[in-house]
Length: 176
Ligand SMILES: Cc1cc2nc3c(=O)[nH]c(=O)nc-3n(C[C@H](O)[C@H](O)[C@H](O)COP(=O)(O)O)c2cc1C
Image (cartoon, rainbow, N blue to C red; front, side, top):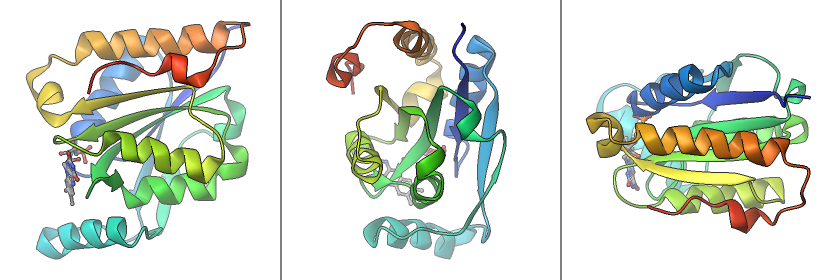
């Protein structure tokens, strides 16, 4: 039977939103949105992003979308803040820890820190994501990410539909 895959998005400045919209249109997967109880505005909003990352805080969030427990795999799409997982995605993972099925992780970043987010999710969940990928904001803005994103979506489907037992590290996407 076809596996059910859900995309869960947190985006602050809109790059991840652009990527998630393309992924869901490429694959026909549904999407859930994370927003914040206390929206971040202006310079203080940006400072709060940095503080949340530095202190590994769990800001209060709202999630609107299908329940992750109804799916075989959830693809988390989130930015990197101060070399770490963005606070609202940290909150989502902790709040839904027991409901989360297999995970795939897409990190959006300027230049560095994408793999730290994967390490943090691994440590919160106590298991490795099935697949991970990192995209830069520049790749999304200039459109060059589309082919790799399609390949990543295909790889998630193949991994989910495969009956073989495969080590998670074999499924990491090469690249950034
Ligand atoms: C507060 C803040 C901290 C950031 N820290 C990093 C960082 O440590 N490393 C990095 O490569 N990019 C960093 N960025 C850039 C974002 O990760 C990048 O622009 C990403 O594409 C934003 O995704 P979004 O538009 O979906 O929110 C930071 C951006 C913000 C606003």
